[in-house]
Image (cartoon, rainbow, N blue to C red; front, side, top):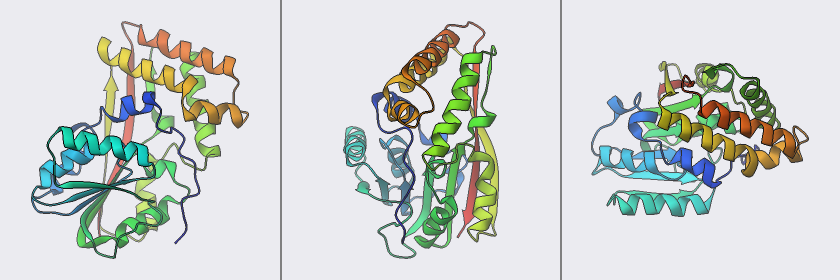
Length: 269
């Protein structure tokens, strides 16, 4: 099977992990939770630092959960998260969603959160997720949609960020507006029993604004995304600094409000 060709735009900089470690099954996989049962075998594709993975493991115990990601360093971090919470029915391994190292029909649930937007062939990835899912099981995917993100007050700096991020992500081989495409991708992957839905994150309290704006300001100047923006000729350091400053200014707005929409699909294997 082909290996993944796209570059992961965000990388695993501290500003990225700061965001990813905030994620839980409740705030990032609520659409899947009614389908979970004790004793199930679950695969969490692109598990990152493992906070969602550990939640899934607690929900399906005594079933087993396997988390896979492309980076060994982040998997070590995920193992530490699980160990620190006393979750012992989970394991982590390096893995590629385009070529999963598991036999056919290995899992009852195969889950991917914010993964398909970063792969070169999301339809192929969904087919591979289906291959390792048992007949009658569930393939679940959730992805944000950058072009549909919206905020208040309006600011040219964040509009510039939105346009810049889209260019960088596509140059890296991904599709940042994945949320709206999940249903289409699932149908093209051969699924016929699909439950589509949508949900949002909203950052509007002073603490949420400070956290969200701060991590994006840092990500804009210091992460793998920043290197891709400069190396790809999409922006120079001065532009990235201006965008980061716009994020910080928005974070100080008492009326500040930011919405991140997500598409979701539950696909019967």
